[in-house]
Image 1 (cartoon, one colour):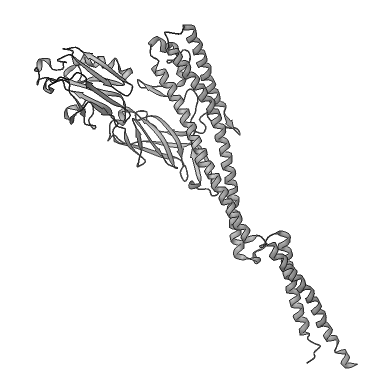
Image 2 (spheres, one colour):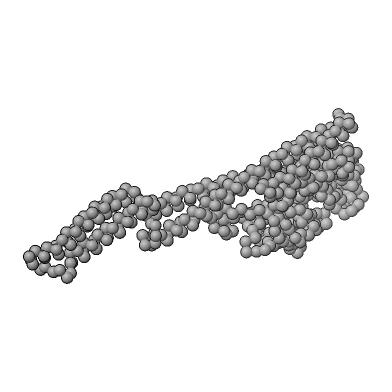
Length: 518
């Protein structure tokens, strides 16, 4: 049947030509952009997931940059700390040389003091000037700010991490649940079993005892008839060599007995007192020492304590809860470490040795340095670290007679200068201050090094891996396959060309009707 009002063949050819034209347009667009998905209609689901991946990639890319910048900050900080460490080591060498007072002149000691003064000034100058991009690194600006610390309970605090997410401040509570103890041995002053009450509190027969402590060991010869008070004086005269002290249980009453104690608290301290010339018969020996119940307040509660025969005893570390979590104890010191809170506290002796006292609290109100290490801003992808001041007024902090002695006290005219130490013939406090300062800087360097190696470097490697995998996934979803698109474009070109030819033929069929009228 031949019609001229409606050219169905032409309509079909035109429709297919438009389709092949649209297909050719898509192939040309993909080949020119390199993307399979250029607009939502190309692949709605693929568009959604690829855009989400793009967002993640941007976050990861910036997180990698953040980690690299943080590494630069840490490296700059450690470079300054290295110089401070070298200066402290030189001060250590000068103090050890000055302690050799019998072999150096006053002029040499004065010259050493000048070097110590200049080294201390340099330490403070480095602390105040070390910076990165205008941000001070070692002057305490990156340290944490605390409020409400009672010196009667906490003598020194070192806060290395605190998270302020969803909180303007961090409250810290400390509850002592088991007291710190010194190592203690008890020597009974009651000699009634041997010679009767008139000789209570007296060494009945000549004896030699060996006193051993964390600092060393000494032997003491005690003559017959020596009262316990004199024995205590002999042992206390050697405390600097042994680390062991002695005291009567009840004031000046020698008959009450004698207590030997380590000078420090904690499991690292011990006391050993042993008679070297024990008599053949145990009943003839009036020098018998006993361990004291660890929960007893020595020497106050000794009468109610459980005594066990022993020649050696160890101290006990304080045990405490910090914000409800069990803290690690070391002598009078407690510490806790977590991503949200990491700190170290030196407890006052009166607080750490009396469990059951009220809980002490304080607030961390600000400070520290926050590093955004992940692509999403939340506490799990952030790391907090505090860097305390390293000036000479902040380093050391050795407590002697209830007073904190800092590195600055080693300068000329100060309490722990070389001249002051030489006058007292005691360089021990000076040496302890320098050692404590070196430990603080070394620990800080180690903490920063661990942060850089185990947090920043590991984070960068992890993010790099995620970035590579997500990029590959996004490419799989969104990028054009050039081989496929080229072949599809060729197909579309052929269809386009043939469609034009077919449409031309379809139009010619209507014109052939004129031949019927001819």
